Length: 378
Ligand code: SF4
Image (cartoon, rainbow, N blue to C red; front, side):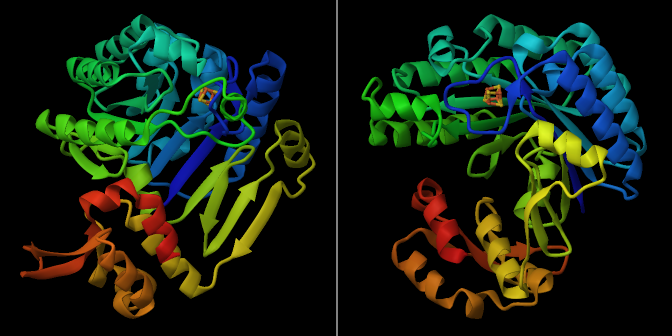
């Protein structure tokens, strides 16, 4: 399993809570960037099981730019199982959706975030709830079977009924996958500054927890299986690209700010489009930093990532993957996490091997403190 990630660093404007690397779309920069990607893709000679075009906002690219990008991805698309593109409702149209389907994109992830116009406005989103619903219907109409809807909760000014209504709307739209994210206040964002200046009030923590718990129960009652702390899907629609990431498998990232992980080396590309383009043009190094991880560090990272999944860590799987005995490697962390009821032992039947699978997974309390658990295992 190996993934390819392509970062499209353009947006219509910047949402106040966002700390991903993206800049406002300009035709000239986009054309230049697509040419750079074409060059990089033509030099890549390997197969990927998953491809993920993310951002930024990939659909802010115009039809011809998207077409050029997808043409240069053809040799990879034909060998991949899952090809995802992220889309924002305001920049999706019939021609783009048809192009995606024709070029073999088989999964679309729509940044709806909410179906409440006031909540969308507060987040600085550029679309209305009507546009989000229309975009989802369009994807269905033209043949997308695998559709993810992204939602945000815990937004200042949001109420419990607004969140319930968002989830209800999602069920009505019947996607195959739902991702829910709690709003975080990242440093260097306008939102963080507003919070510092006390212009907005952070939502009560208990209410946010109540919202998360409600979402888990509600989505499960409506046929979605929670397979990771933020991700829910219908059977056979788990996101393979993200599973690859949580299993600490290799991936290659193209574009400014993208990460790669190959042969135990973690690397991050320069977070500046202009510099990135210049470096690639001159065949210079565009990596901002890289680190060769020692086997023990790789094993701990695997533990820290895989614990986010609901199935957790199977000890046999972990040993085969890393060469380390989980119970020995994580002895101290395990003791603390079990004492605090953040993880529990998990024993289940493995019918394929006719034996018991033994491992650990997050408890219900652990789901709420998954960052603490991941950090403890690192
Ligand atoms: S559209 Fe997405 S990537 Fe762009 S600014 Fe908003 S949250 Fe960030």
